[in-house]
Image (cartoon, rainbow, N blue to C red; front, side, top):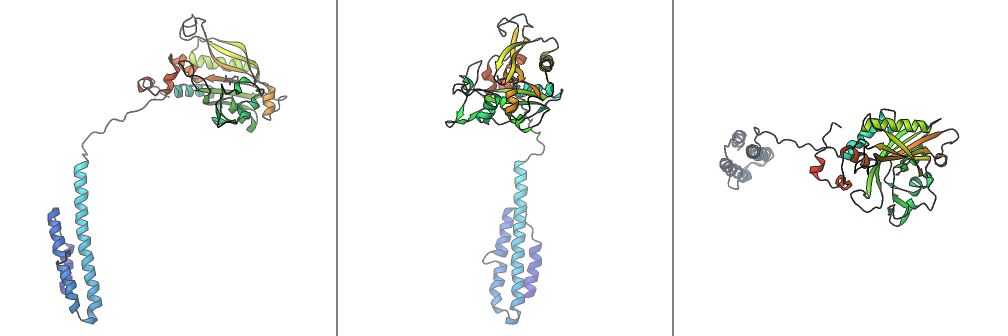
Length: 339
Ligand code: PHE
């Protein structure tokens, strides 16, 4: 019996099959109920008691080896047939379709780049805000109309949870946390409850600038903005500052640039004035500095805020604001750039 088992063991280890039928024939020959190995199990009854232990072990070894060998051959069939069917290694790869950056991202990056060249670093703040950071700290009186439901999106009837209406909220956050000197810009999305049309949307993008140090003057503000306008729109661009009002800056101004579409001669885009407004700015109101824990007797600063959509419209002459959020590939594909 032992000899027979050893002989079969040797046989089993050398099994080969070239196709599924041959493999099935081998399985039947060795492992089926009437197969050679089962026969040996039947004969096991007749083995002398003192040999049962040793022979039993051998028999089990034989059965496992046969099963393993057959599985191994089956496995080899499966993997070779699947690679034959599915993979053609000679086929050329599909070309990768590269996307393009969104025009607003392009312009945002360009603005960031221009200001980083004169030492501004970047910070961001939350879009879901509270009243203090968007209005209170920025010197808005309690009944100021900007707090009104018509402008501001409030969340779940709780007037202290709202979507920021301007990136000036990041000013209050940064000033409360950081000691001057502060020279930073804050890009981000803002929300206002406006009817959507070609010239207004319920969300848009701003880049805020803030510079706080000892002896910062209005001349510094004007110089930084002139540098920005020329870098962004070209050396021949002129700027003009018109007096304006914001609760958080005093004095305040709005800045126009000479219309870069008609070169200042007058066109429909600049409503024939030759000028286009691109940002609001001013000297940070001492109340705001104090609200944020900065000593207004020691420090002064300027701030400005610009609309990214407006700058993009000017740069690329996009006439309808809604294009920026419609995700029309024919529109987006036109903005190929190195940024
Ligand atoms: N936050 C103002 C706006 O949204 C812009 C601004 C920023 C004005 C900073 C002055 C200083 O219109």
